[in-house]
Amino acid sequence: MVHKADLVIIGVSVGVAVGILIACLVFFAIRWYKRRANLRRCANERSAATLPIRVNGLGTSVDFSASISTTISIKEPEHHSQGLQHSWWGHHSKDRFVSASGIPRYSHKDIQKATQNFTTIIGQGSFGPVYKATMPAGDVVAVKVLASNSKQGEKEFQTEVSLLARLHHRNLVNLVGYCVDKGQRMLIYEFMSNGSLANVLYNEEERPLSWEERLQIALDISHGIEYLHDGAVPPVIHRDLKSANILLDHSMRAKVADFGLSKEQVVDGHNSGLKGTYGYIDPEYISTSKFTTKSDIYSFGVILFEIITAIHPHQNLMEYINLAGMSSDGVDEILDKQIVGTCNPEEVRSLATVAHRCLRRSPKKRPSIAEVSQAILKIKQRHLKKDTMSFAGEDFSRMLSHIEEQQLELKNLSTVDEEKR
Image (cartoon, rainbow, N blue to C red; front, side):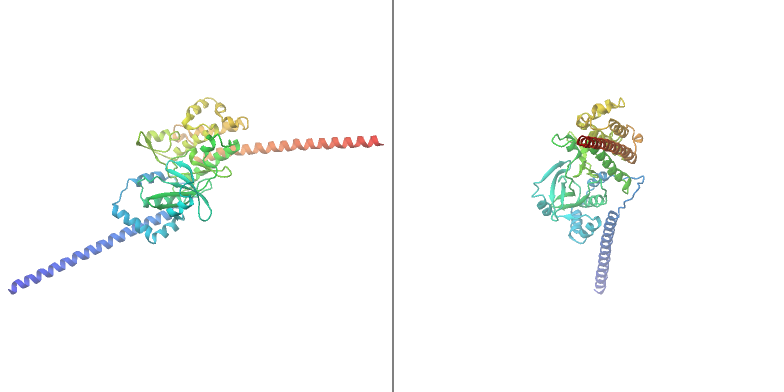
């Protein structure tokens, strides 16, 4: 009996020891996992918060829209994803994210009130409706509601907001807020009172743009793209440059919008795999599926011809461009009729030459955005110089006319005096 009792005691002791050992291993494994997850999250926050901005670009580039598309395909387990999002927004991380991005986060209720229950719609973008909103402080903004059928998770959306928030330039439509609430994601941008370039060019009710305004708009767009390509670290490829994504403020100054938000084209109900908008897409990208900064240059070339002709790419613009390219003054035939006779033909031809260079088949033969900006600036300077000389000539003629009138008055006065004598 004693022998059996000893065996029972030994068995129980070993069982307890093994149980304690297993419990310790589980405890340390859980601690290690939580610590690793926390370090990874902190590292992600730190990297998102310290995206630098520089004056001159490097050779590498980031594709914002590509980051959106790749994050869509990443699926976390549902319970883990929900827990992570809850901890992100429910605790102190929320304040950290807002301070890191510098962009305020609004609730669905805030946006609902600012848009008068979403009744102030001003446009319909490829990602969803756009509303005009008046925020509590009185600022007027534009609210872009992203499609609810997107599979992008909140964490990935937060990362996009943090990245977009770091791109600031006078020729970019700046992000001023966002909303992640009630299953909806919204981006809040500064409001541009004159709408899109496409609307101004193709809406007959709008006042036609003068040639001087068109030159300035072309220069503004080039400066916005130049910042994306050469001013951000790493450089940003827009991927969806088009006249509808160029917005105009109260002074008809242009700003580039929707950078980092390009959407995959759908053909016959199926995803084509192509990002961008037909009529603006680089043919090289279609054949190779490689998008570069030179693809943005091609799209900008199309926009330049839109500015010159007021012909939409979907109205066979490329055919007109090819015909115009057969002679040095061919662009005269497709110039917007609303500005014929009010602009210098040489300036129009010079801008068309720049646009033709942007549309070269080989990306290597296309100019950089810095070269394009410089070329447009020279055209603008020549325009201003001629205007100044013209004004000076008019002033001189006016002065001579005034002197002649004074001399005639003096002569009449002297004649009257002689008659009185």
